[in-house]
Length: 360
Ligand code: AMP
Image (tube, rainbow, N blue to C red):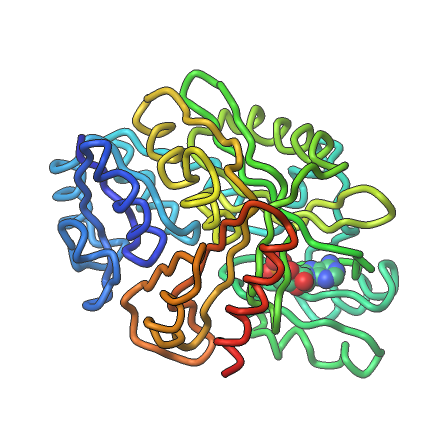
């Protein structure tokens, strides 16, 4: 089976690494000449709106999937005429726009921060008056890794802030005094069967995910699965979807969804029976889903900007290096390490060892 992937970054690369043993082949559509998934399949170097290359991709593959959600809706609509596309255009439309996303949470009775649509500085002033400060202003689309958002703490922070974020449609959210951030990686098959990985505890630095630790048995697992099931069913979703939640007052508030494999699920490559990448491919290809059970205790550390010396990472037992082969750049995710240990005490010790390499 040949899979077309829109986007050729590290998520596409890891999809191909997981799908190759299943006998799958890959083609990536990505305008970047140095797309890091390119060595693992055919690289169609073209813009996401380039109909000639989209048609070529559709002709060459059995189905198309995505490694990022900011794909133009027209691209999905165009491809869907010629080839099955998973996840659906509807799921992408909702996930790429924070207003649609939060409105869906509200309609499904899933707790989420208070929010308001912002189309002007006047809207912002009015929303601040009703939601209060602190609050977070976010662009409705295209924000990632903390980009396209600003925390507003004082009245001065509000002045001119709509223009500061580019005078584009935004969302104002109440600031959540969370005690932790967790994510739930889910997978839903074409026949509706749904599986969940254990909740993951995430730590961010400057808006970028730094560390993910798979939980042993989280008291909020069932609640998270209940919320996620509502969304998956509503969208008749096929593939992996990640849910990010704030832990607050002993419950959960939904922050966002990602209609794709997710950074906080990278630990599943070595830490689960079947990884999120393989399960996404199984789901979109109509194969039976794989077990989401954890094998040992696992954590993932992102390498941001640069990867530590390979020999030093390789010298740490129970540590698995994933080097994306991307050019090093400040703030860019260029690799990660998965740690898999027999118990939590050993895992914590290994995390400290890898953190020592990052700091060094
Ligand atoms: P996001 O791009 O929405 O995932 O936001 C990036 C990070 O900003 C989150 O992981 C949180 O650490 C923080 N953040 C986002 N929204 C809020 C909020 N409403 N209240 C408090 N912190 C937030």
